[in-house]
Image 1 (spheres, rainbow, N blue to C red):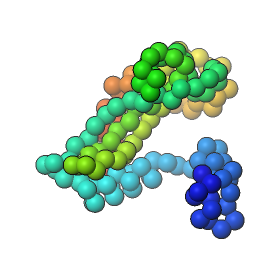
Image 2: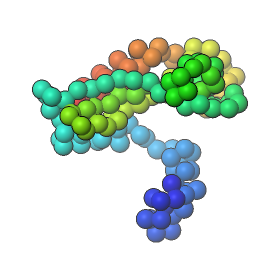
Image 3: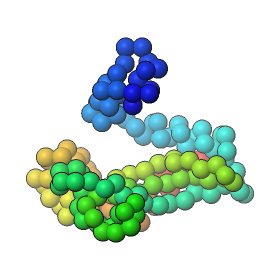
Image 4: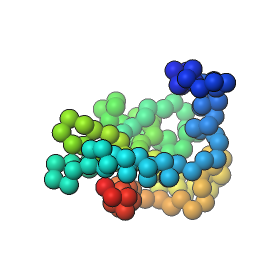
Length: 145
């Protein structure tokens, strides 16, 4: 963060961190623009491909949204972590992330007190990783991917 904050007059790493994690901003329009830019610059109906994967973020404690003992690919074992479903695009040696969504395990999705404590939106319903992946793919498709 500090590297980027140094490029913006009057900014600090703390302000960037606040903007990304705490300020109310809509990220969907940014994802839409990224997907459109990727298609404009490297999109290829014949040689391009989307790919889906999950990635685990090892975590300590129990208060980060979706954290639990589950398989963490980064560690190669079951451990305390968060998991995100990721949608990427590739063409030849070029690869980029075009969308992602945090997986919220069913026990988290059904625990109202935890949801309130962590600020999980009321409209978020439990979805399997496959359901999340399908939604990400459909969203990308509607953006021309």
